[in-house]
Length: 80
Image 1: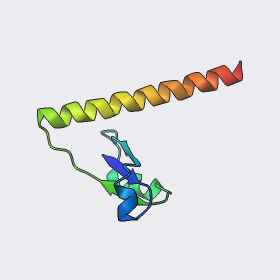
Image 2: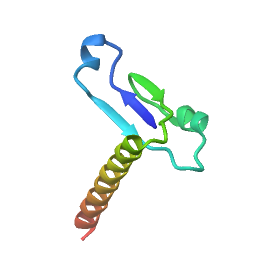
Image 3: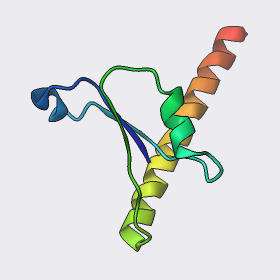
C-alpha cells in the first residue's frame, strides 16, 4: 500500500489528509517511490493476509475505481 501524507507536521498528520493506493501485483515498490513527487511523506506498508486486511484493501480498491470512473465520466462530459 502506498500512503502519502500531506506535510510533515504532527498537528497536520492528525487531520487525516492521507491518500492511499494499493500497488498493482506487478508494480515494484521502489519504482513507485521513485515516481512519487509530492509534499509530505511517502510510506509503503505491507498488509497482512487476514480477512480484515483483505476487506480493507477491497474497500480502498473500490474507492479508487469509483474515483477513476468519476474522473473518466467528467472527461467524457467535457469532450462532448
